[in-house]
Image (cartoon, rainbow, N blue to C red; front, side, top):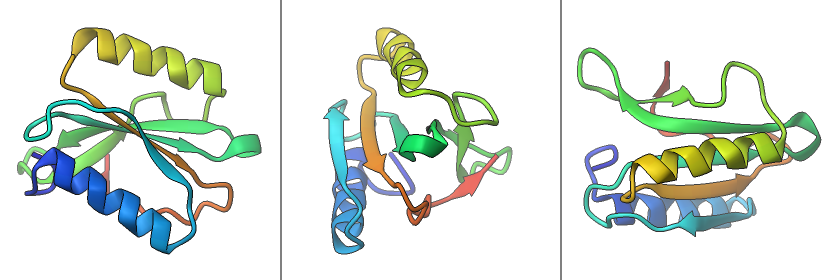
Length: 111
């Protein structure tokens, strides 16, 4: 589950929030609709791409970590990271958000 919801419902909600804010978003890969883990691919175009991985804190609070490192990477590097993660976890969801202006707010703490 993501943030207390089924994964499919949470992803649908993110798509809807992005749609309302005029931020393009698409499900690149569907995983398990109930308990799949989510990767958020935030594409800032000239500013680079960051892939966030769903995780939790020591207090079991939902959070996100920068799977591609502290600095944005190129899109091919981000896609290679995603491909490696998908190979390890067939239930993985990938949500790509094209956020040129940096307006998308991740729901949860970034660790």
